[in-house]
Image (cartoon, rainbow, N blue to C red):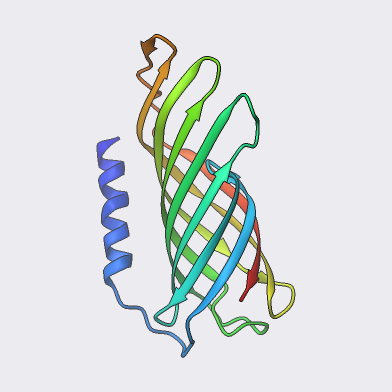
Length: 171
């Protein structure tokens, strides 16, 4: 489990430190809304910079009053592949994310977090609107949840499958 976490951290730094240049593109923003595991229903914004790099923030919730489950996710992405005909950027992206969640319901309370390394693709419907499915592994970074009145040691999953679907608008 420790080796898997170390591998994710090393991959993140390799992608982050390498300066990928592909096409001449100005900086732009995206607005996104969608559903994914582990972030649930979310909205967010992405900033595209340095030709084909992206940093993104998502805020999510399950929207159930008695079962609070809120998330915040920071994503770093690298676009690759052939440039889309409907957009001046590359449609495929390799993404590295960190999600932190707060959970509070009738029997469990606390924080947990995930590291994710996943692939996504932008399917442009028009020049501004696009659909974005995403898929890849997520590993739990920590699980500090409590079953009311005693500590819950968490679960020992080596990874879970991250999948999701977003609808985006390019500003």
